Image 1: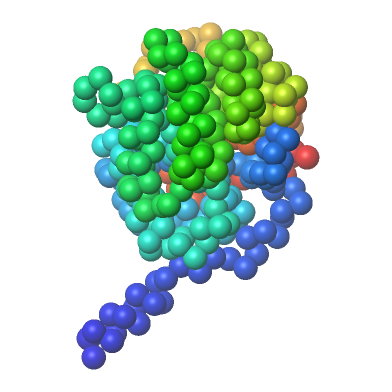
Image 2: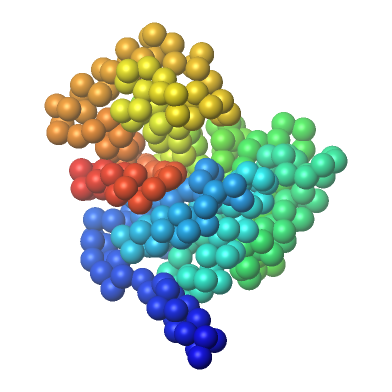
Length: 329
């Protein structure tokens, strides 16, 4: 009897996606460059909040909410965590528990390029590193393939041809359907586009940091190049890790990411930057938006942008981020 009760409880807890998850598909998705891929305007990133130190049930709640509201693109990398690899392990558990029946509705990306394991072969852009990394990622994520595999950063020492041929071969081996690159300088991006196109593995998308504070891909030409060549563009850190929210308008909260250290440092919030953030907040109010909504919708208004990649520590935060879609055609 107890065993039967346990089975019934497990069945009751089994995830069933909302039947209305594509109710707003006409406004939810954008074509990724000149490909056949449609991505949601807001995609979910696993950079933070999905590692081994984070509560699994919270990860489940966030991903359920995302998919139930039409977010089909989940973005990972080999060293997301912490510890390294554990965001992919969390995703693998989510696949087994919840998303296996919906695999063909999901667009899953992962990356390699930053520090992952000790020694000379666990970093940068060598063929050895990329090939080993994709195999490890697939094992952690419990997948046969990913939809998109990125070179996570430009390697100034490894020949471009070595990195790019590894991406080509990963597609030809059936381990990824598409390839992308992240944070490469314009010249290397141009060379990559040509190399991949000539080998019939066209570059699907470029991932760059674009937000109201950091407009480097616009200023350096990557966004315009992608738009001209039919390459998608996705912005990571669109809220500048929380700077473009109401979190820091009155200084640094004691429980904030900046106060706790890590990728945000207190000395980053200069008086000049704080003044600019407050200006953006006032501008957002004139549009009837929060600062975060305005920051996301501003990115989506830029020509050539396919999607913004948001993190979320709660379903409430993700709900707020999704409001930016309503303001962008």
